[in-house]
Length: 377
Image (cartoon, rainbow, N blue to C red; front, side, top):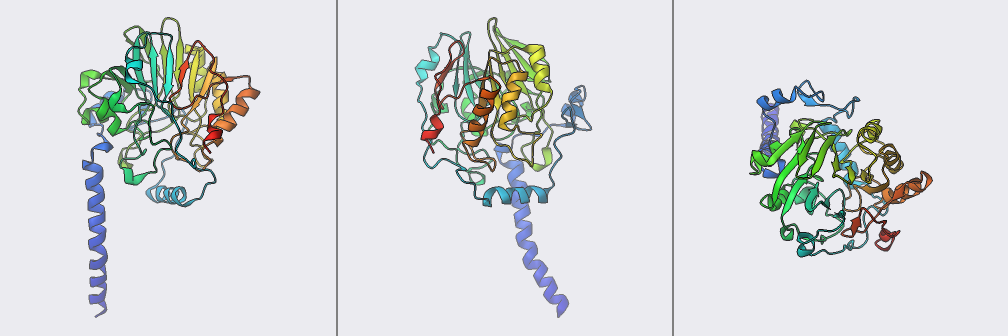
């Protein structure tokens, strides 16, 4: 009798677990937003890189340590159930709108337009370049798996963007490489540039290989009248549990004949900022990661004070804090990053730039001081 009861109990438990795990594996293997996987033959190519060891990409220092599945679940539980005062704006964050023709016809001084978080449009030397173009509602593989961005409207909808000459991607995390955004952009873009391995995702989404160029750290490529240099970062990669560290992460330097711009991607603070500043600086403008930090992961995301110091290391004339203002991805208040950064930047005599979402930033002109986020609380 006891054996019979145990057998029935295992049956009742086993069937739901089987369905759960079958559904999970079907989801990660067939849902398109997860992207592609690096093949064995492709890994052989990456073995030439100093940043690829034992079948995976690595940082210069031994970070980060991979979380186990149970540790990841524990962290997710803490994230979703911890009440954070002022963790998100009480109202929809307002944005400045921009017209498609204004972008298509623009031929004046170099400018940037921030879309929130780490997404930008750069217009330089007659070129329109998108950087980490995340236009999606949720930074996750599916809308059910994340919280909505702070602004329901964008400065311009991705469908209304005109022709884009190039897209730069820093790494394959969902808040930087968004399936929906790329699918809507793919027919408008001439070339996509990214660190090693990230191209597998774009290829799986239907973008031709000849429009994708992968670079290793310190490799540079010419594009029209510009030079793109793939520069180091201290972070990690992966779009599902079984492909962590399979693609490289990076920052970017963008140089014209007259101007030099830096984009940090995601990175913990480290000596690479001084190395980049020494090799490619000084920079006229630097966009440096500032938000989504925590004492549990200090090596892969910077604290705001480190962001200001990174600006000094890069020899940047002006520094803009990024990776904040759009998504709740950590347990600090949504305004904490910018407030701490501005305070430290003043102490270090770093000129800070904090535009509203959608506000044009002219590289040759200082933006008026603004504390726009205080009106959004």
